[in-house]
Image (tube, rainbow, N blue to C red; front, side, top):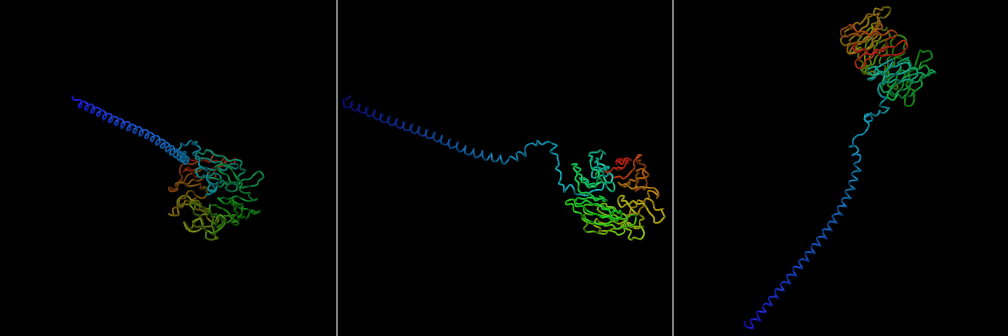
Length: 442
């Protein structure tokens, strides 16, 4: 090989090596730069992730605080609801206690007269001379109120609406007062002191009623004592047979024989007085109507017409005409019971009659001369006292049933009443104690 070729070959090799070296260096530089950029990018991404993580954490903390505050506020607001939804751990006995109504509500209603014993609602009030008993339908004494003084026996001793009992009683000195006894709590309250010679005759929610008698016992004045302020109102003079209702007071004129007299009605305070009849001998109140015997004039006592009217004295209806009766009892639907009477010396009256004034049908229970006292009626059966026995008369069939209750020796029957369809006999013993006897299946 020529010398020139050899040199040229060497130079080409050296150039090739230089090219390769330059290319290798360039490639190394490029790789190094790419690696650097990749590293910077990784670091940057890591920092960004950390920053984002920190930001997210701060956001979560902020949201968490907000949620915690909102939750706390919501919890605070929902406490009553949570408590209401919580199981009721109240004592069952406490949970069933019914609040006692207000006094105004409890003192309302009709105050029923209780002479000896009477059903008031689902219970029985028995009036002893020194106590008031409450008995249930099984004749058990469930309450016994004592320390009441000596209860009056001049008229009905007690007037009760089932919640309270108003009664007149005398203390050891003889002073007579009117009290109100709470039958639920046993508390009693003195409402007024009666004037000497006065008689307590009725009560309603607002007033106590009494008659103040003159010294000769021949005249009286009907007065109303307002419970709220003690004011005294005068309702009339010379009255008898007073019936006190929540919205009306009914009176008959004072008399000392069987002659007819005036029948009147007025408001509880004496307002709106109305004369129902000028010549009346007997009246009863039932089903929001007044039933009475109207003689029409003062000439003779018989016959009379049986009439009825509204509580205000309006809507007068003639139910029967020309009855030989001085008094009567309501004995079921459209039926009255009375003892037939005659004027003068003739005592051969019509006997004891059940009279249906719609149909005109008469049933004679007994002849005159036999004492029969009407006690009550239920489902077409009349309960009567006859010769110290209590007997049952079937009004539709017009006959006495075989069953009879013999009043024990040493006792006598005074009245009777119905409770849950059962007749109860009221009797007084020789020691002046009152007892009630249920006559089941009688």
